[in-house]
Image (tube, rainbow, N blue to C red; front, side, top):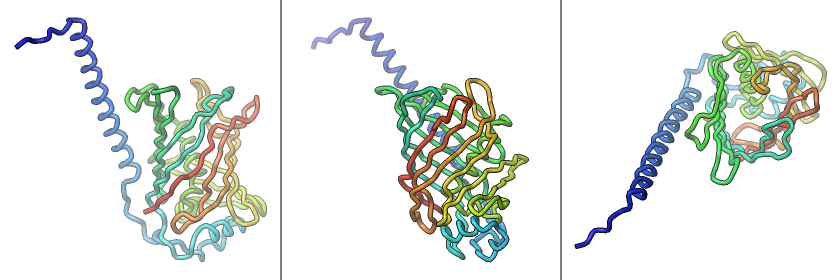
Length: 286
C-alpha cells in the first residue's frame, strides 16, 4: 500500500489553519459565554416591591395633563407592571457626523422596566464577510460600551466612567417608551408640567440624575424627547451636546402601546447628526 507524502509547506499551512480555527472557536465560545452572562445579570429577576405589581390610574391624578393622557393611552388600568423586556430591532447607523452612508444593523435589546437596566446587542456588516458586534449596557449606575470584530476580537470599549454612566441612563429614560410602565412615578420617574404638550421627566439612579423633555401629540403619544446636555464620545473625549429623539407608528404589543419607529441624533455645531434610526420587529414582556 502506498502513502501519499504531504509537502512540508502544505503540512505547515494545514497546522496553522487548524490552530487558527481552534483559536477562533475558543474566542467565539468565550465571548458568547461572557455576553450571555452579562445578559443574565441585566434581566435577572428581582422581587417586586409592595405596591409595584400593577398599574393604577388613580395614582396618575397629580401628573401633568399630557402625561396622564399618555399613560391612559398606552397602558390599561390594573395591568401588571412590566419587568423583563425583549425587543428585536432592525435599522441603520451613521457612525460619523461627516459620514455619507448608513450601516444596517440587527439588534436584540434586553431591558428591565422595574429597575433601570438594559443591554443592546447589535450586529452589523461593515464589509463582505466582516461584521462587528456592538454591546451597550447599563445596570446599577454603571454604563458600558464595547465593540467586537466578528463577535470575537475586542476592538475597543469604555466602562463605568461618570459621563458614560450618565449617558446610558439618559438612553434608558428615552427608550422607556418601549416599556412604558418604566415611566410611572411608582418606578421612580418624576414629572413636571411644561405646557399642554410637553413635560419634563427626571430619573435618579445610583446617584445619577437625568432629565428629558417629553413632547406629546393630541392623541397622547410621545412624539419626541430632548435634552440640552447629554454626553457623547466624540473622538476620544466625552462632550455634552443637545440630543433629540423622535417616535412614531404606535401599535399594540401585548398589553401596551409602543412606537415601532424611532430615530435619534445630536445637534452639533456643524448641524444635526441623525445617528440612529430603527424599527421594532417584535416586542415581548414578562
